[in-house]
Amino acid sequence: MLEGTINISGREIPRTLLGTSPFTGIEAAHFGHRAMLYQLDFHENPEKVAEIIRKSYEMGVRGIQLIPHPWIVEALKMAIEVGCDMDIIGTVRPENSSDDVATLSELGASAMILHPATVDKMDFQAVEEDLQLVRDEGAVSGVATSFPFQITERLIGSSVSDLFDIYMIPLNRLGYLMDCEGYQPEDRVKLEGMIKKLDKTVLASKTLAAGILQPSEAFDYIKTVDYVDMVSVGIGSVAEAEETFRIIASK
Image (cartoon, rainbow, N blue to C red; front, side, top):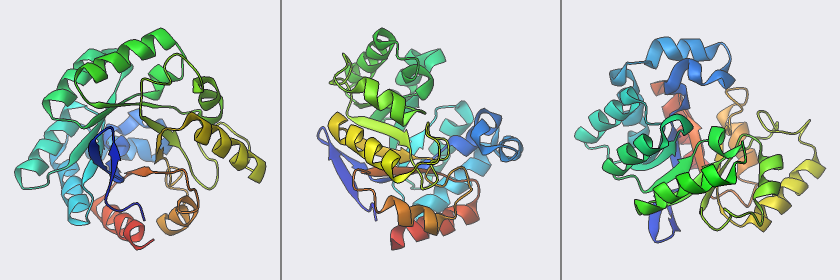
């Protein structure tokens, strides 16, 4: 399932990515109480982060969805030094977009995706300006949202719809951390219709519903969603990396 790479604007990008949200600690509030545990484990601790990157690489993962905090960047460099050559799909944060683009460009990122905090405001001028920063660096451009129902509808036919190739959305069987109530069959049909109309490469995140779902049940659902092209999976331990990526590979 989701093995190998996908060609996006001439770039071969891995379909399965190591997500780095847990490494941001309390910034990743959707993990609830575990966000504080992640803060204690990972904040300013690149060695611990690098262990998980190395294990993910060992499990066959060749891409990382990089939030460019300094300790996460340092961890990636440590992993690269020992042979873990990860393709980088970076997140461009709103508070320092030009710095993030510069950092990700220096790292050789294949793609850069605007953070939901930028996209979900639906300030099309700001979105367009940041997408142009990415495009000027020659990277594949993308946008992410926390509200796939609301934002997808507004992106269709918008002034920025031709400026990005990757669309990152939260997606899981429960509809958790998605802007719907219950994620009923009619909700699934509605979202599918909008996603296919937008016609972008879809990167699914939050597939484990912040740890509520076990990997096997989570990806039994994801493999039924034919518009998902890529996944990014946040990992909180070496053991979790081994279990989760083994299961994904078996689906």
